[in-house]
Image (cartoon, rainbow over all chains, first blue to last red):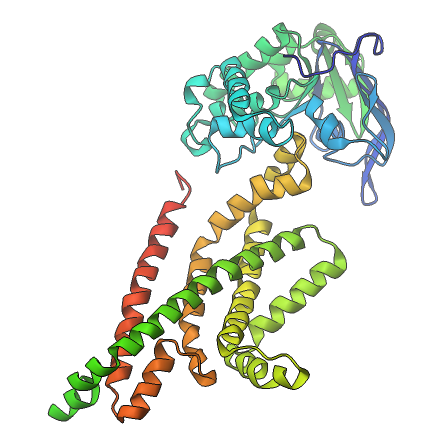
Length: 255
Length: 224
């Protein structure tokens, strides 16, 4: 059963659109009028130095961070402004955090099924079947009864991805999903993301995994000082960046 | 030596008053169970209410917690028992003891559980809210279970301390263990009933202390 509403004719293949997004922390402007449209099944990578506003932008996309102004739409449905049923629309936006944020008192299946049971009101058996299915997609159905503390960092992050996937979201947001992982565990998480892309998931990814961005992303965005400086296919951004700031930033990674 | 034994372990006195002390023990147990269950529930409820950060509500909770933690329970017991009838509220001594100790425990439990709620990482709230859980559901299903596990040791300590305070009921005539024992002691002019009371307390509370250790071990998160 597909729970994500597949709106026919809802805007021309745009899954997520951000319009003139502004956000300040105190007097410090972090996002200065950001526009971005992510197409259906597109994987967009966001690069930028720390403090450039990439995480804030991502967190505005499900209103964990409240934008000061600007609008955000998920498949044509407005997310911003008053009167939005946030708890309902958030189920269409999966979020993966740098620090996993698994619930330590619940096992993997419990983590994945909590929102299915408590928000979508699925009966236990149905929620567990959907939860196991989601865990299977990240290759961890055999670890369903393990608690987070009994899992490696890479496994924890995959459970966190399954927790978001179980809700059948239209868009997945990744906030530095591999930054807290030991290098040898990064690959498993990236493999899962690659599978998700192959299955047509729309993804907006903030990450420093340049190599992965280069061969998996459809589009790369370079952000600095709260603005999008440059956007283009990975070959262009990595091979022939047009802006000096992009070049300067990337040169530090090519070393 | 004989005098010592006769004072503290007079068999005739012990035998005569043992049934009364046993009755008292029942009252102590019932009172303790009521106080601990409702006191902790009320305290946790107040801590949850405080999590909504509604200015006046939080302020009232903080005032309640601070005042009830600051005042000696004996003062509150005497005030309630001898003061309330003058404003038309007449409560039995059992009821006064129950209400005062329950509210004192609730005040401490509120602060303890609140500490657990604030110590729960912000990411837990964010993860829960990002999957569409409302604030209340995130609190009930994600944050509170972790908060309570975190504070089980101070909570059990406080619960044990408060159940021992049921002995304060003696001053307003609650026929609990100590109440029965002091009555028996004045009738018999012998301290043996008090010895019996001490033994009764040990029998009752030692298992509680052991149970609290088990509870603390049981809820230590795996891998911690």
